[in-house]
Length: 289
Image (cartoon, rainbow, N blue to C red; front, side, top):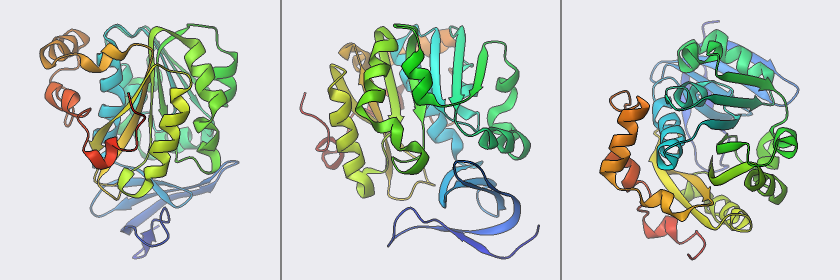
């Protein structure tokens, strides 16, 4: 329906953003959350979950590329990848760009997010939904990780909401303990840890929790315009500390071999390496090495 109303984000009580709605496309109350998709004048189509902007067509590439390409290229030989959440399909699509990936399991708890993304945001997931390497499961990611076989994945990518509501259980000790168990010897897990300018507690508490189960814990950053407050931090927990020390030319060579080089709009080998060089206001919330 056409409308001249505004959607106001409700993430912070005293600071935020709003979008002028060109046309509302869907408004659904699923079993887990309130979902709204609308056409905006400035950012293309936008998905909102429980009043919080999740993704826009205009800048989704920043978040999706950095959440996917950085861990997979740092690892260098990830063949089996687990994705938790990411119901819009953007992470799945970019994981499957990597030639070396043999299997990508995606577990999204809310089937309505997948359905609506396919219908209203088809370009974000693209052909990934039909890729034979993809195993898309509508189910509980916590339960999947609990039941998965030891050392069955090389990388885990968690694309969830903030640690409130449906996303809260993806930030617990039990979840990270199971992630460590099901990862191979060089395995790693990444997840969004909020905007540290406004959500420093999220980065600090999540990093401390991951440190109980992984020998190397840090974060890297991406500047996503839609996420109010500057840099978005992407939390990093790995069994091998050397993965963040790969030099630019090696990352470039890996990206070339993977079929990723030249396909991105934000990620580059230089940005990959530089993203781990954190300003003090962010690094100060991470565990001391």
